[in-house]
Structure formats: C-alpha cells, structure tokens
Image (tube, rainbow, N blue to C red; front, side):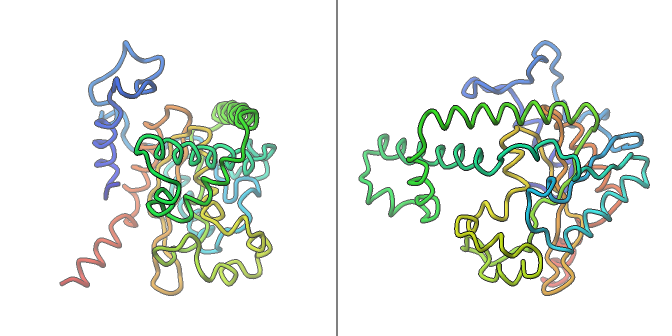
Length: 292
C-alpha cells in the first residue's frame, strides 16, 4: 500500500474515520476519546523495548509447507527486534488456534460469501447464469458454486467457531503484544495463475503430499497465514524482511499480527523494523538503477 510505515500511518488516518455507510466504522469503546489523527501521533513511535513478540513460522503446524528461505528470513527479522530490547518467544508448540478446524471454517465462510456475491450480482444486474460465468474469474465462479451447497446451519456453526477463535486470540494477547509470522510460505509465481505451475517441485521433500489433495491446489493452499487472521479480525502489517536466495531474488516479507483494534502497535513494530533495516528500500533502489 505504501513505501514506508509513515505513509501507511497517514493512509490509516484517512481510512479509519467514521463512515455512516459502514455500520462497523468507529473505534469501539473510544467514541468519546477519538483523536484527530491517531496513527500519525508521536506516541506511536518505533521503540520496541520490553515489547513481548510471539513468533510462529507455521501456525502450530497448520501451514504444511514453508520455504526454507522464508523461515530463515523471519528468524533473522525477529533477531532485529530482540537486539532492540523486545522479548521474543517462538510459540508454534503452543499456538492458540491449533485446536480449531481452521480450514473447514474458512471454506464455509469464504465460499458461502462468494456464493452470496454471485446471487447478489445476478439479482441486482438481472444477469443470466451464463453471463455471470462469463464475467467472473473462473476460479472465483467455481468456488462460488461450491459455496451454494452450504446450509444456513453450517454457516451459523462456522460463525460460532469463528467467535471462539477470536476469543482464543484475545486471550493470546494477554501474554503477547504482537505475533510475527511469514506473510506467504512460498516464492512469488507467475501472474494469471491461481497456484504456481511448479508447486510439486517447490514443496518436494517437505510435506509435498499436501499438494496431492486436489482441494488444496487453490489459492487457499498458499494463503493460510493471512486468511486465518481475516477470520479472527486481527490487524496485520506486512513489511519486507529478506529475499529468496535463488532465481530473481524476489522479496520475502513478514506479517506482524496485532490484537483486536491494535493497529497502533502493529504500526509501531513495523516502523521499528523499518528504522533498523533497509529491506523496504532495496527493490525500489534496484528498479531506479536498472531504469537508468
């Protein structure tokens, strides 16, 4: 969204304003104490001394495959926090969402949501099924049709499980200020593809059986580190923290996950990393050099 955390903070000050068209827009419990620009105030700063940083490389085993370069980059990144006074703890052995069926809950909520989108589009624009299929991305249309098979009871069960997940994360943040994870577990791949064409080679030797399940050869097979926190409503910030060792050395990023309504601490942690590293400038510098 931006080249610096300062610009993200400015962006957040605009996006987080009250909006009568969004019934959820406001700072819950803080309506009478709102400040004009909460994310760009000096108090946010970048000092992480004493901050309790949890680290998970695979969400307690839920993410079946994480590229070795990604894991090494995340470990190096949290070393930066530790050197600046943060208290770093690896939590994969005690990740709070491990007891939930995250995949099933996600599919009911997401596929059901796409099915609702299909029906809304069809009804509002008075389109035929054939016209909808022609207009929509093929993959999105396919999972939308899958979503039509879920019942209202299944949707309510999924929402109930989602609430329990949110409670588990609330309790997790009693012990930690933020959670750090990879953003994506695999290298960037070709445009206009839902999954990389060489996924079997990418995962060979490490849980490659994960990709033998046809249902996993979809975008949710390589996005589990992000959709989990969409379900629990955690604010997340992603910032470059390394690059792959082979090929075109494309960037790797870490995800900083905060407590509910904790965008300010996410910004602080990301800003601290940016202040002590130069990863966020490297691609731009290379591009300028190659263009010139």
